[in-house]
Amino acid sequence: MGLTNVIKVLLIEDNIAEARLLHEVLKGATRQEFRLFHKKRLKDALDELESQVFNVILLDLTLPDSQGLDSLLPIISKNSHIPIVVLTNMNDEELALEAVRKGAQDYLVKRHITLDILVRSICYAIERKQMEEKLREANQALEKRVEERTIQLLKAQELNQLKSEFVSMLSHDFRNPLNTILLSAGLLEDSQDQLTREQQLSYFEMIRKAVQDMNQLLSEVLLLGKADSGRLKPNFIELDLKEFCQQIIHSLHLSFEDKNQILLNFEGDFQGELELWDEKLLWHILHNLLSNALKYSPLGGKIIVNIIAEEKSVTFCIRDQGIGISQESQKHLFEPFYRADNVENISGTGLGLSIVHKCVEAYDGQIFVDSQLNQGTTFTVILPRQQPLMSKIGESVEQI
Ligand code: ATP
Ligand code: MG
Image 1 (cartoon, rainbow, N blue to C red):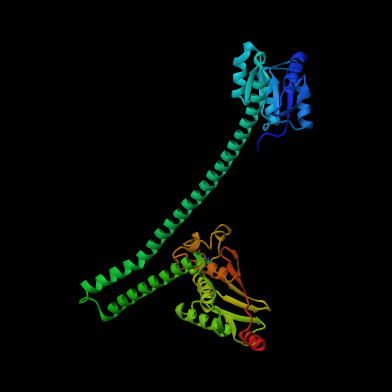
Image 2: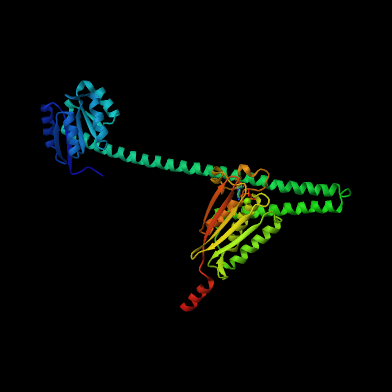
């Protein structure tokens, strides 16, 4: 913005003769029109500044109601955008300079004022103020950017920290089965002659189990990585949900050697139809929740699975009578590698529930936990139901 056509000047000066003189001087201006408003006291000037806008202020530093630099601060604090030219006498130039340091744009020694000097000083003060404003804005924008970048940097550092924690947990969990393999292989190699056939087979079995564990761990980590980069998307296929759940439970009964009884109960509208489900996501969700229920239950504790079909969604409710999860631990359950304090010597990596969470997310579903220490835990998962495939095909046939 350049200079406006008419420059409105507020003169704050108690000496009427000097005010008149300045008025006369400004009248002589030809290239620029000035309109001068005169106030004798600081208080009146401040009132005037509340009621109208000025382009520049000419300020005498010796006023009846305020002395020296004291006049400057109240004006600047409320009108920081208006440039100020300080008017000074011969002997207080030092004070005028101090005023410029404190925020005035220029100063004039009264006796030396001529039309040229006055006009030049007013225009210079306006331009200088505009430059200052621009600089301040640029500075603010810069500060904001620095602040934003700092936040980004802190986030990146946090992420790095998380990643390195992840890697160290992972290497730890890889080392366990690796050690088993190394030890068993060493024993088989060195003491084969002393080992019975049965002992040998049991070492081979340990090796096989360790390799399976590592393989499982690797695929879980890959799945989490896929979820984090947004590549975990449902892939729907036709499935008989009832049969699918029964199969998972059957295989778990086998691997946990019937340690607990799992009671499966279906409610609502299933009608044995094939429906669209993502087999892998569903498997991860149910398998992890059910194996947790088994793992964290005492021998003989019952596990009840209710699967309730509603029009738009299916609710999976898995209730156990196991060790339970404290309120504090419930807050961290879905973090990778998190394990509660009360797991004691029950083995696990702490990845299962973070996988369940990612799979439920990918499914656009919801998961809730309700648990009491030493009483039991209930996990509830609600997944949206897809439109049956048959009706979809029907629709597209009709459209053709
Ligand atoms: P894994 O990766 O082998 O599944 P994990 O079972 O320890 O190991 P998560 O399934 O992620 O890992 O479970 C995290 C923690 O939540 C467990 O270590 C346990 O403390 C607690 N937890 C999960 N399910 C139950 C449950 N049904 N009863 C009690 N505690 C549970
Ligand atoms: Mg688990």
